[in-house]
Amino acid sequence: MRIPIKPGMFQADISPAALVRETISANQLETLETIQRRVLWLATLIIHHANHVRPNPDDSKIGGHQASSAS
Image (cartoon, rainbow, N blue to C red; front, side, top):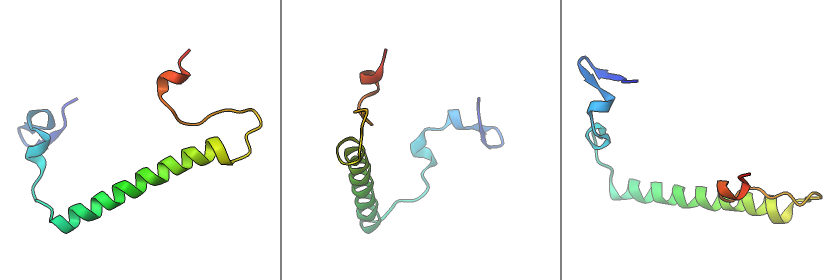
């Protein structure tokens, strides 16, 4: 499916870099990197808590690579 951006122009015709209209400052980039690190930390903590801290009578695991659960 092609999504029109402007009349006669479709998303498939434009590279993602061409859609960026403004640059971000070093401060904004640092803020985004801080948020990224915190989100990664939180996601890792959630998986760790689910696998090692919470009561888990059936010893099931959360997270991991999809192939580890493949039949």
